[in-house]
Length: 263
Image (cartoon, rainbow, N blue to C red; front, side, top):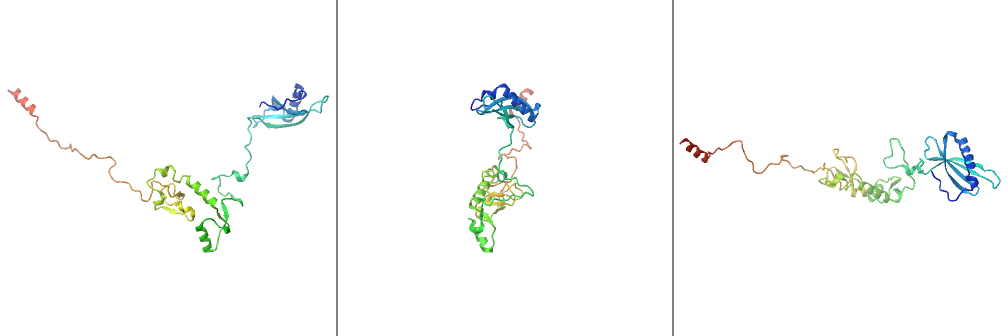
């Protein structure tokens, strides 16, 4: 690391004697074999400056021992204020801390893990204020029961967008090469609620989509109505020549030549 100070350090704090004082303090803190070359001086203010030394410490590549020295004014000797280990420009440092609830990503949940949802999760809404889904509202009124929270409109749209762009959406590679869409397949089971307008569950065990939510315009080669034309795999020409039997005709020119030679 090469220091780029915003101001020049006080000459009394940047001379060789101050550097030796700072190095001795760093060696006392870390050990003589763990303090490397002097790589820079950073002015803190008019009466203090920080000297940087390479840190020869396992696991701290690119770090520096930072020793701050100060003096009380003309006629006084510099003294050490603090010795710390600081990262340099190319140091290996831990990534920026992220709160736990923001670190979890889709697919991280394992067997036995618990993943509570926050109280203000925008994907959910209290059931007693409505679910934005007429089918759910109708069922809840019919049986007189309800869940504590249900999908909010934002939660429904978020799921729809995620499923639409997933492996079983209409733009996937398999869907583009399919002979027909799931909406006309006998194995397509439409899900309840507003999401059922565009999504269902595949019930064909022979496809990779079995048991997954699929878009109505998704498709695969195992469509219930797919048909394969019968016939030979090798094309056969319309005109067929049977050369098993040959009709032999005499060559008149050769017969005449043989007669002349016989004379």
